[in-house]
Length: 64
Image 1: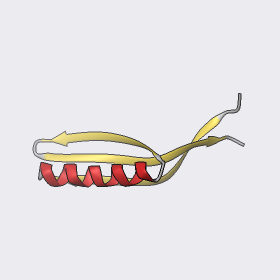
Image 2 (image 1 turned 30 degrees about the horizontal axis):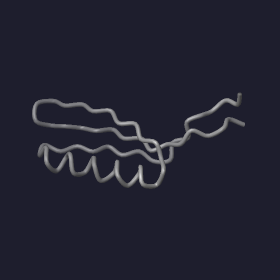
Image 3 (image 1 turned 60 degrees about the horizontal axis):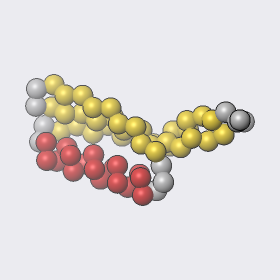
């Protein structure tokens, strides 16, 4: 069995105090990246009314 590695192609940091705009921006990146056949990791954080999402676009590729 060959070993695989995570190859990161792009990252995005999305933040907003308006929840509608925040969700729209996250969904825009998520939809576009998934339509390009990439995997996506998302980490969320919030502090009072500020929401943040750190997104990573990647593919698992064979380690050489």
